[in-house]
Length: 378
Image (cartoon, rainbow, N blue to C red; front, side, top):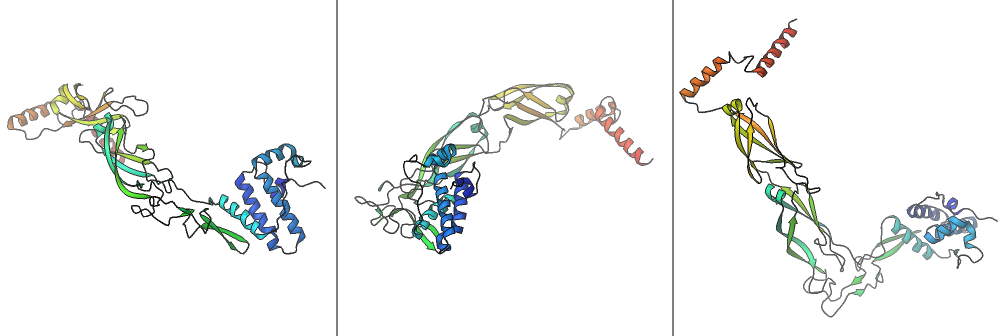
């Protein structure tokens, strides 16, 4: 009698991944397990089929052979050993489902070593430091490997002993009817070992609280929310596992003159009424010193002037941004009588504030206002 297709037995596609195979096996094995079907020969036979299919398809080498040659790959001595095993005891059931549950839900049979946690440190920089780069020293609180026991947690001349409850696995299995539940060992708390003579400094933890000083190289062009990773500078691992990483989060402080947007710098430059009207030359600041900026005559408030390559060099491609200066025409204050009289004369020469020739924007605005109200009264 021809054997059934293994994929068909488990009800999965040929493209199924290991996780899908394990889920299908768990579901069917629970349904047809002999413990749940006492005296049912058909259920027992079905369970054997399911188990055989699972053992072939979960093994990469056997699955590849089955996909290529079918059942013939395991007949006439081709397999090297029989893959068919008979389920005879409930303890076998518990072992299988301990593995399946562990694989599906991310469990592990032992948790003897655990990588240390990653840490994050916020570092404030001035704009100048962020743009030009610098080296900063930081002090961080952390858990470091104990230098007395070198992370083992045991006092000098002793060593941890394998846990007698879980036999060093770190986890135990408990039967709940036809289920097998896998959980951390209550004796060793998942470590797989017990320390009878703990280290006097770390009290068996293998780690101690400490503050360490690190030197951090800040690359030129770094900006707020950029992060620098320092490998293995986080918390020490448990049971001699690797340390975590330290992430240095950058925050650039507000600057009194410049604002940064990507790789460009912006600043506001006040100019007086005469400079705006007649033009001239002024000095504007950059992060490298001062440069001269020519102001053309009849410059309006808010006009933006670009100074090439006086911004920030990109931390990625080293392209340099620009400095953009926004001029603001400042209304004169604290005028003396002579200055006021001069302005009165100047204002009269404009033929009022709606002067078409000297104030084109004012004329356009008030002409638009007039049209707006004329349209309302029609």
